[in-house]
Length: 246
Image (cartoon, rainbow, N blue to C red):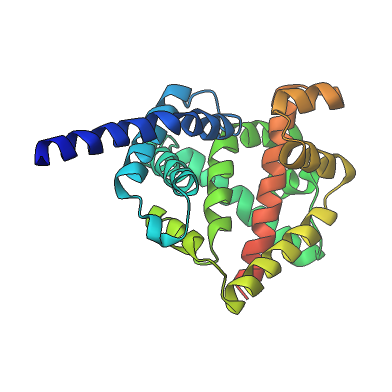
């Protein structure tokens, strides 16, 4: 009888994994659109698959959340953890990220508004072309870094904590205030971007176009859109860091 019960459990487990397997490719595709081509799609799918299996094995229906919702959190968390473990960014790239962030923050502090690409390049002591090359190099790292920073003000990178907070049926007043505050800050920061940058934000995050598709809309190369997107993320991150450092 025990053996029969175990067999039924295994069958149910396998059927659930198959049922929600589509989520892995769906979420992995979302990440792939925002990462450099050096990150293989199969690696994202592999990590996401482990997250799905973990979700099925640990799912507790009494937590007032569906298996699909739980699986989405686990898959996303597993992919993010895998990306961090890859540590694809060399010391020189990390230094460039820090230098660009510091230059942007310095100009933001002194001007009281978002600096232009030309101003950041001048502050770094490089030409605009050289600055654009730097943005291209750090694009993937900036996307991942922004995702991490926006998750919580404390920059918590734990998959468990991410899901634990998401399981709550209702946010506390403090959490609702924090979310509203971040939304307000982002809206203000985006309003200070130039017209082209605001359009890229709209097309990328609201219309969900790829960098290549945005390039076709704006008659620019994909690499140029990549540079603009990186500059946008750097400015938004600098703005948020400036606020939370107060």
